[in-house]
Image 1 (cartoon, rainbow, N blue to C red):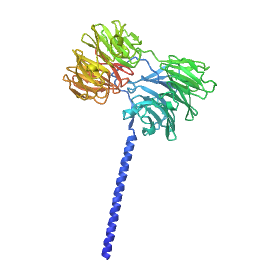
Image 2 (cartoon, rainbow, N blue to C red; image 1 turned 90 degrees about the horizontal axis):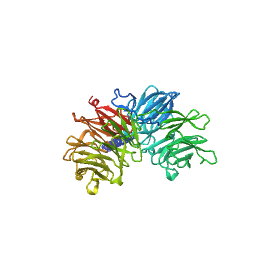
Image 3 (cartoon, rainbow, N blue to C red; image 1 turned 30 degrees about the vertical axis):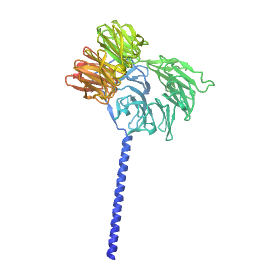
Image 4 (cartoon, one colour; image 1 turned 180 degrees about the horizontal axis):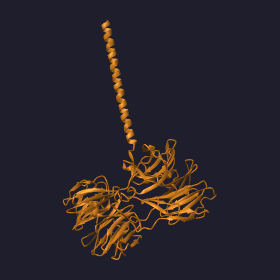
Length: 640
């Protein structure tokens, strides 16, 4: 019996030990699962970034050409006034004298500047001016040098606005990742309800925050919750342009008026119909900076607040209304104004300097046979620049407005300009001669590209192709075999015409479709074709989404090392010279292919923007247009 009992007790003890061991192993497994789960959550929420001193490139390969300064936001720092704009940062002395200029691409990263604020960050030892860039994170300036706060993932670098919070924290608005908070050690999304939105404006603080969006109205984060105010809740428009606060009241500016909130609750709309690009709120009034009406002051304590006080300031396009001490300032696109001592008007304090070119948002480039560089703009017509004399002639009207392509036609001594409102023909002297639209036989008014083809021209439009010659106009579209009606780009080699469309490539001979290539029937990586250029016996094809592909004469597509990838080539932003092929991209800079080595390189440093939109060549010089200015480079430097 003792042996039996002992055996039983041994068995029970062994069972208990095994149970404890199993329980321990199970608990350890659960613990490990929880640890892995927590690590995954942390990795999803954690935004990797680096903080480093910023030093501009030692060599500057690109030469910037003079484009007008575009004021965006002003800030007083260390007794000097700084004005940030897409082209760079300007430092002015108290008397208004320009002291220094930090140019984007030369002294700063190749990304337009979008805002500024002063703050003592948690990882800093002194007050700094924090400068936000559109694509390269944040720059912190202490008066002596810059340091860069750069997230690893591109979407977290795309800053739209900032707000200095308490305890050295910085709130950051982004294009795609909502509101972020930087505490000196980490960057993270402030709250999931404020993530994955396009933020346009910020006001308040980390505990009680108002965030304007591009299409969802304004979000109010407080007490651990987020409220959304859209048109159904009283907002005059879902796109927020500006936010200002005074006491318990918050004012939210839109393109059609300003919404007033009292203690977090929607109250009314003031200044209905006003395009409110900037706001300054006081207890007595709201000062509204507008796009086209100057400054509008809305009195808050009068019996009839609809009696608005309007004042013209320069050429309008107000970007900011702000205070320095007791004085109110208005910053427009090219001027700074201060309210005079009696408060009855505005006096100019400073103005941006003169520039050679009319605008910085370049959409097309071409060099004609007489030494004129033609520069088309996205919304400002075009410039004809005589490089030898330096004379610039600007053309802008109802047709020459949004320029897509410029084609000097040596046979006819003309320059054909493809615009969103027709094809405009200029004579040898640079004068406008003729406008062709749908009424003249084009298949559509919007001309996206133009190429010399046969004895005439081929025109690309969103409705198909139109051929123009002495016999008149003839069109080709999907019903006749075109792979897609929306044509973006044309390429010509001999009698062969390639039409790059939204749905693939059509090969055309004698105005007849010979073959169509799409993702479904070929090695094409993306159907959206943005650029086509002949290279040797074949073609190079730019796409929206797959970079650059090589196409041989048999219609086979070949990926290219470094140049075929998940990036976008801008419409018609490809250029071929005897030494190189150039491809301008959306946000990835300039890609350069060397014929002698068969290799691609990527250039970003030194550009005023990584969004390269147009290219031209003349006498060994390459002209590079971006959405933030124009630069040039000697082609021989590319070999160095």
